[in-house]
Length: 291
Image: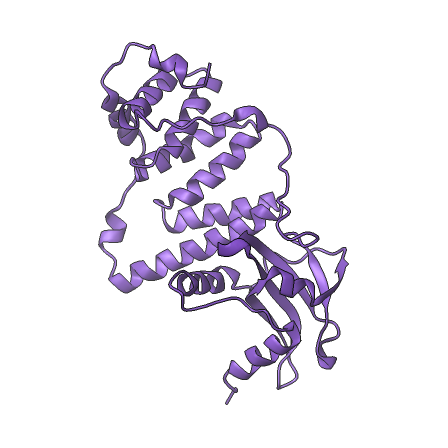
């Protein structure tokens, strides 16, 4: 029997009663946003998205404590950020911390009642914590609003270590590599932040580069460069057994990735395929000179 089948035989009540109780329980105050100017709201959303993208990067690299910090920062900026709420809570569920996950799924469900994901997890969390009536009421809400789409989740992975995706082996998220540098950048390294599939079978590797010498002789950190995986494999030389500083103040990966993704999605940006040393030369030429 699949997870939701047992609820189909339950006596249906008012499917919206659960939602009414939930919305009364969760105090989601949106008035602060109404008082903001369009620019202020846009800046807040940008900050939330930047934190969210940093969380995704850390999460995929197995840096759980760092990812949770940035997921939390995202939904503190924007309490209706359901992706940050859901991912934060799903991480707790994967560690069998059902009770701790419930408030975040409830907030997500109230923030966006038209998305079933939080409701699905609430059914599981309520059941695991002995709240059978809530579990049944939530399931009835799901089955009423998504009668043909009620999602089924394989819960067998809960409590087990996450497996890494190997999209661009031997490259993995969180790794630090040496690469074929310019003569002046012999101590420079790249940090693999995010690996994702794209159209046509292409794999894109998002990297940061540290220890790059600027024209004035200072060392700078390049927060985001999107690279074709095969092209990047031609640039790297050796993997280092070191960890990067996920909290460095000059790391603006989230902002850089966001601007690139928006442009890439509309066909106005691509990915790098040239040698990294040449790409860095181009980046440095685009940086305005200091007065």
